[in-house]
Length: 250
Ligand code: SF4
Ligand code: SF4
Ligand code: SF4
Image 1 (cartoon, helix red, strand yellow):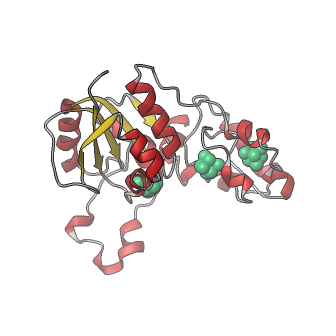
Image 2 (tube, protein in one colour):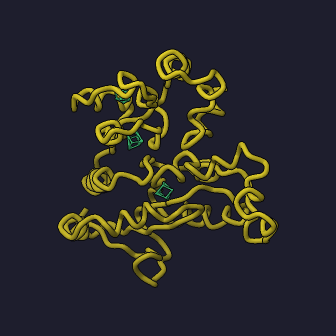
């Protein structure tokens, strides 16, 4: 490709942390990326709008019917759509509310009926439009984004890892959380982050979603037998980031 690849970035139900990661890449990486791509729409950083783009980066989950048409329009204008971050790829932390009928009252009390709080089930954007690539993580991994965009610029099909976090955790010789009397979801969670959480003394909570074929029954067994979880707590452990995956498994 001789001319620059045009990129647009959009947000839906999210904290916008993934887009902040984009702007927070570090001058060297970001300027290097700008040798190959040109941002044509990016609400966080510019006011221009575009009628078409090569790559649309979409952050946030789909949780309001009024967002459907905007998603469809992005799909029409983009050659490639990349779902960016846990919210967009699996519903992410927003999907916690899918299992709680009284979430609005719990959070907003007597203001829970304010019209702008109305929302439906939090879903990945793939529930509405075809997604070409998914960049998991909360937030998405910016090095992974650079690699994926770089692959696309050079005509290569990007590969998102599909092995568990445990592989990367073992490779960096971190002591397993279960050996320390703690819990962890690394055995069912998608690698690619480098297993930073166990390395920093906290469990993997599965922010990158599940691998394609997670053995959740094995995770439940270990959570009960090694970490002392009740069966109910073990069964629902994955609701933090991956409740939509969990629902599909059942
Ligand atoms: S994936 Fe995480 S960081 Fe990204 S928008 Fe959602 S909540 Fe924010
Ligand atoms: S700490 Fe977590 S990611 Fe690391 S080996 Fe143990 S279960 Fe796997
Ligand atoms: S170790 Fe788990 S929670 Fe931490 S970044 Fe990786 S996938 Fe996310």
